[in-house]
Length: 475
Image 1 (cartoon, rainbow, N blue to C red):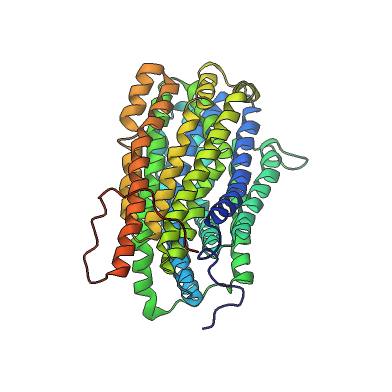
Image 2: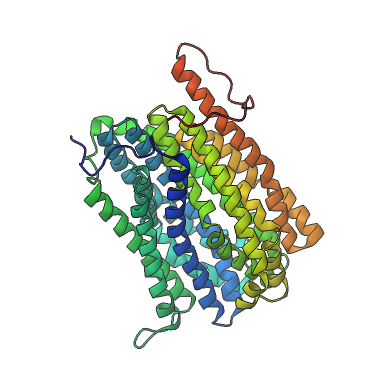
């Protein structure tokens, strides 16, 4: 089967790596920023209803939705990683075959996961600390949103496939369309208009489902129009394709599940200080991805770059890509943290945060936001592990960060400084895990290069610390 003419060559195996990192990060960041900004506006609209339990319910629901999103993210990582490697090796037909098998397998997996979560919603909401009316509202919200997990999976997997092709703007378009749909539906369904009744919290949930449907439709349409769609699934190759997909997807899902588990534990710690503190943390949870959209997009940006260059065996470029990502992170996080600090009082006033909630916001807009450099470094390292065929390392790193690096220090920070101290403890706990992970990412590139140059020899152990600095990219 011939490659579709629009597929084009791998884009990341040549050219300025810093420019590639910035272009992919900004394109992904704009799309994420649009979605996260709408989420923030969603919370703002709900706060206008004047019922504190509604904002708290959204905070509790966010912890559960983070869990379900992690499943789709893990599945999307598999399709993006395998497609990028095939494209880097110059095999666009193979990339389309992998995409077909991955989309089918991930859709079934997402549907099963959605059913399990939906059946266990009351128990899951109670597990993160919601009680009484707040718990009832959180369950009502989640009952509407959770069944749309397979739709969100299609949107995320489609976006990952577009990024694997280097189509940053096309991937961004899927999230922009989803955000636009949410922005229109949110006020319409929350407050009502003409014959449309005001649905409040349930309206916000329905708007989220509509946004997912719009984003998935755009992603699949672009894949079909520009990149030849999906190759037929070959029965003879299906078993091996599924092994390759789930060899990455299962560790990636486990990796991403660690994040909402850490967030759920943090929510539970904060819940001990009342609904005001939880509402404040819900606002922080919405501000965080808006302020640090480029940090969150870095994983999706660096992964295809590393994957394509791994397929092309351009090891110097892989090391240089990691270095460029860290430089980009440092500059961005410092500048954004400074902006948050200068605007901290304005942000607190706009959301009408009370007492404990206001204190949470002021702490976040101070020292806590600086820790996002280490979050981003861990994202970049994990993306490298996934694309270099060692996703289990990212699983270990992320679980360590969100258990040993979160739970004891968040509890200790809360004991010393109250609810804001829980956020500070979580940030401090991530530092050591990020440093170790990024070091191992460089080391894994060294190991892969040694194996490629001397396949008859046993590669050096991954756990030996790398020799920094590494060389510059190939000409």
